[in-house]
Length: 296
Length: 296
Image (cartoon, rainbow over all chains, first blue to last red):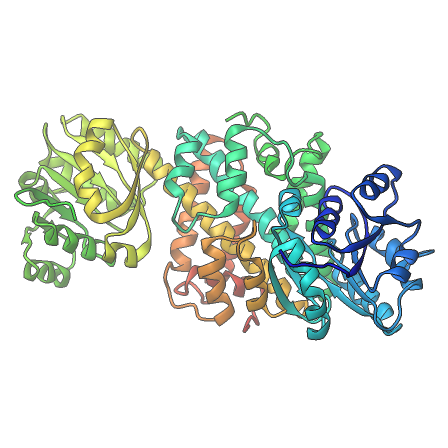
């Protein structure tokens, strides 16, 4: 593991993802300065060895590199630009790394305002869920200038096992949006296929096995297909999150003047599932929006 | 390779897939009796060592095991049930293996009529295209009774590298329909994602690289995503074939009284592409139905 001994790293946001990520930075030897809204997780990370402070602004004043891992674009805006936010604490020499899933145009706006202070900004959203966060094995899609990415790299290499520099600021979030579009639509594909198979008298588990190694094969068929077959939808990725990600991709498409018809339909199917009480299930439960009696 | 020396195997249909498959049976030592509609391929397979005859009926009279590899359900009906067809030449001891992509309900009807003569029937459609046919590395999804599958196995193991017995007669075709649904919809997913990425200012090739190994990863992202990025749509699998497969899956869904909304939308997108002259392109050209100016 990369050694961060002697480096001060700020961390904002200690949720399901942020907490294990922050712990990994401490394990790698970093002097971590952390904050988050809830007192419980703040105490927990103090026990784990972090210095805790009251506001994102104080984090940015104390740490030259600050990782942000909050729930959505609104939370990112509050933490980066609101009262006592990161923006008030940064200056030349600061590097801000937003690892949450934040809207692309908002990201470009935040980056411009951070960079106007002389600081650098990198968007580095992740894929891999809580398991990846705990194991330091996240897939990281990074946008930003080459120098900023290189400076962020030792930190990102502690948190993830695969880092791709996609392009300028915002393109990490573009890649994440593309990732979420493919995940949602491929879950929909596997759902329609397994539903068809079951109704047509085939065992969906056998069909999934038959499809392995062919063009229909994917991580989604393997992992989410299995959840559909076992009819167990403990999240993983939640339906409400997947719907939000599809809505965010469609908002971006609307800004760009392009149509994404399959993404639009997929969002509607997720909304149907939320209306019938499935919002907190794993996103593979989409098959229940297609087939309310799904029990295979 | 499995040795078929001394076994007489019939073969009907010497198209792009059938010809290399039939050659592989000859290479494995089988005494092949073949027929097909076009005189050119018939001469070609005679030169390669097969005995050629005029009709499918004659093939079935001479060979206890007959492989059928024709273009679609109509062609399968003609070869299996029409004038001078396989049906007229079979009896107890015959085994018919349909390896084309044939509609599920038609398959069950053909099987019933073949089995009424005392013969056995296996549906064993394939995935893997002409490359898989040439290399004997097809993925084979088989439906039929256990004894019939075991009797077909040595032949299927020459033609493919992966054989799954899905269930009773027809379920091989059900698995193939599921395969085609996932392939078409996942191509659509990758197309919308890469289009979004390109319009949002990211390099689609970098985005594809960033997504590798994560939940969005798949054979389709790897192979068909690459074709979209290179803007080269030499088929592979043709748009017209993909549209036919989606229509066939929707017909099956209609028979079963279930809705497949994403499959329906996907078929409409393929039809849009055919209307604008893209029918003979590779099915990954779906991105041009979404973004007519796609040149990335």
